[in-house]
Length: 301
Image (cartoon, rainbow, N blue to C red; front, side):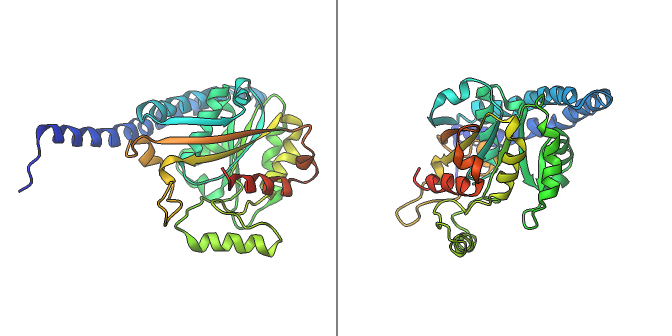
């Protein structure tokens, strides 16, 4: 019969506490935050949009900093940033593009934006099905996020959504994951389909990332360029995705695994490159080769 010592029981209890408490606390405060936001939405309905957005960005910042407390300080995650660290020394208005592996990628964006003092200005281009998530979907729309259909991209709808963010009094970190879905090294069919898509269009088949879809990036760049300082190109690597000799990569961790501390000595390495919006001719002339070139570089990081 298996016997457990008191020390083992304590460790097991602590493990379950770490799994349950952060989740309960983070989701438990959502209704309260939502009702406070609703009050601000009604109070500001007769005010200019930029005034509402300024208050909303502060509100968003407070909640996301609360969430980051668990992800950074409770889990003991180590964030390693490569590249020009001065990028985060001053606030900027940017389009942020990155490879996409996990829901944790959203948290990584907030970690970087928080270091620049821009966490309240983070907005996403996201798949339209997320708009159906209770409370979150409605709020993200009101926060200025852009919802698009993954398989039936409607450029006119995206242009209409971006019009609101062209106001220079509304600073923005517009986050785009050009792959359109999460990269999973175990999903061989998806990877083969992505590589075939690239070959059919005369593009370089990529490893460790999927072929980027450039339309959303192109439209955001074209319509927000007068309200942007730069494009941030981020390549994110999670230490726990390093596989064996037979499997070069393993699946990235989920947000649940991350926040509950199920990963030991979790490290996140980020290569962050700043591309000036005014002087990069590759971006200004045609965003398709620019987006593809940046993703080719990610395969070697």
